[in-house]
Length: 116
Ligand SMILES: [Cu+2]
Image 1 (cartoon, rainbow, N blue to C red):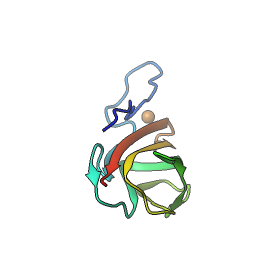
Image 2 (cartoon, rainbow, N blue to C red):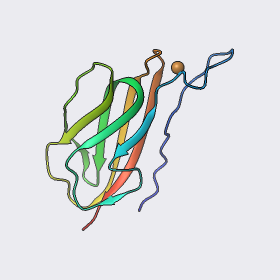
Image 3 (cartoon, rainbow, N blue to C red):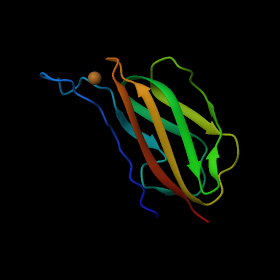
Image 4 (cartoon, rainbow, N blue to C red):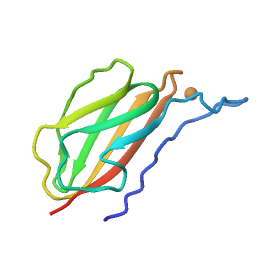
């Protein structure tokens, strides 16, 4: 699998003491990060605290693939989106941006492969 540099949780801490649980962040994803799967029914991100996901981008071998979001811009702990086409084999990258429950901008991503 092609190695993509994925930043899982970039957050700026602007001085002072910061609580360990200040930011919500992804706990698990479907498909799992680094997984090779036969097919993809949906993309799912689970957060430890509600996240307002403002951007979700799926990129495959032929470029960006449109996603139909099941959830809108309301804060959610489980976000799901369905690719509008069946994913061909190859490597895929999911990138998201959002606002944590404490209002901080967050971003992350994960990769997976669809087997031949
Ligand atoms: Cu925060």
